[in-house]
Length: 276
Image (cartoon, rainbow, N blue to C red; front, side, top):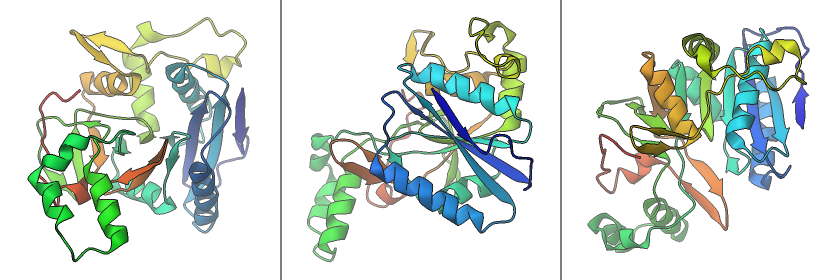
């Protein structure tokens, strides 16, 4: 099931951004819902950016849902940016502005994985935090939690961080901004990925349905659909970027919140050249 608002409105602002969210069980976290409301309120005050939104519900395949989002996005020539946000993420409207201001064709914010790695308690950086009696109880808890998780990102060879933005090998799609030109170039570069069996879709949507998001085995490395998407873009000369300063909450059994720039103040983050 697909729900799209304002899709037929004429282009009234220079930038028109589609927030796309898959939800296989037709539910979103309350943090997501509140963030979406705040985003609409915030961007109503801006004259240069319009926000529209689309759900894809009851689709058990997240890669398929993302491919459908791309097709709907490209079928509407008024849309300029596609922003994937997962249903278990919460954010601030200013985070979207940060991604837009970076002016990168493909950029994402990373987020904590929903699992604490208790062995990190043994690291000297976390021990230093534990002994820091100058932190308030709230800051103490937040910083400890942020340092006990991994983040959904795969660093490449670059170590240069410019205004909190770094070029990476791959990054998760849960809060990813993609310019229209990226998807147009990828569909042109990979005609063999055209999908033709969803004949119930409107023709203008079906024309843009490609398998750009797929779980794949690339040279013996099993990649999630978001990581393989990044590889496909890189393969044709594109670059993938991440803003390390954006603090997102990833909701699960509890709220996992943090950002890598904050963590890097207390520990040396390894940048493996082939992170998986």
